[in-house]
Length: 407
Image (cartoon, rainbow, N blue to C red; front, side, top):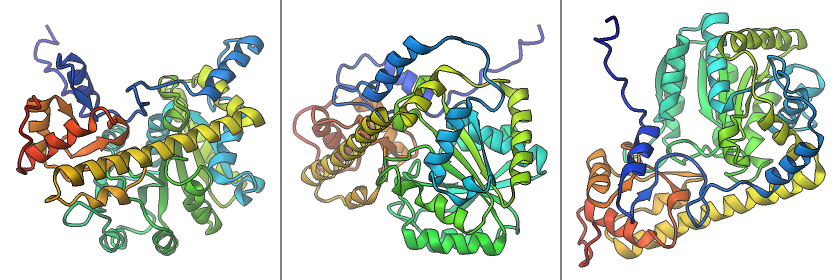
């Protein structure tokens, strides 16, 4: 048979580990893998604002007809207002355009398709490290992903000078990807002076910036987290903004995101949108209706939006508290180890500094699951598991292990 020689594809580096976690019979197992928000019970809840929108939608919805290739119009307008600012010059001048996508992943893939197939780019530069799926998405679209330095030699902070040095060397007019906020996987973000210096370099080198904007609101606030995008818009720099409502609206399974393009003329924005629609048509044809309607209703209703903002703020504060909880517990359990860098990270993830063998030992000995690169999901840390987690980390790091068994 023609399929006899086909080997099984390798498991996904993130979801494969999650599947392994689900099969683990240990009742004390800890999941720090997939980037989903969890409450104090380890459950990913439906946000109150979304639930209320869904109830309203059930009473008013009249059709399940296809959406157009670029998606729900009111949803796209809401995205543009959210990521660019309602009073943005580029919105008023019509030099931007937004297309609804299948989550942030779909936005990244359509952007990559446009760069490779419509604009004939061969390469795209990304931070090292970055979200592992970035590499697969770019390669599948025909781009060759190239790294630029991001972490310092110890892996415990940002090395901005090396990042800038690498970006200064890439060919003029190249495309590069940058995380707008809550860098995945490290949690280390650029400061305001960093963004200003980067914008100057991008303008000088005429680079195309691709913003991965999956965590708006989980860094500092919904408005503040969009500040780097506003800065680049003011500088008349060409942008692609790939956003998602998985994290900040909890719409993981609804697959709702957006791709927003910003250029210097209305005609160019319309042309880019036409190419994005073409690539969408060849991929999935039409985006999903239900999740877009929910997001549009939340963003477009004053009461629901106020509730949503409050919920996002509460999520961010809780993540900050869990980060502090982890740091304090690690300091108490293993004072010989320096985990102070955890406090300077933001968002859902922490680059723990743990090595691949240490992560493997956590998994095999203690049923504690994290990515091999050391990324942990802070939302998986809870008051009822942080002691066990920290004692296990101390053990795999060679610090005096607790007297009682953890396995």
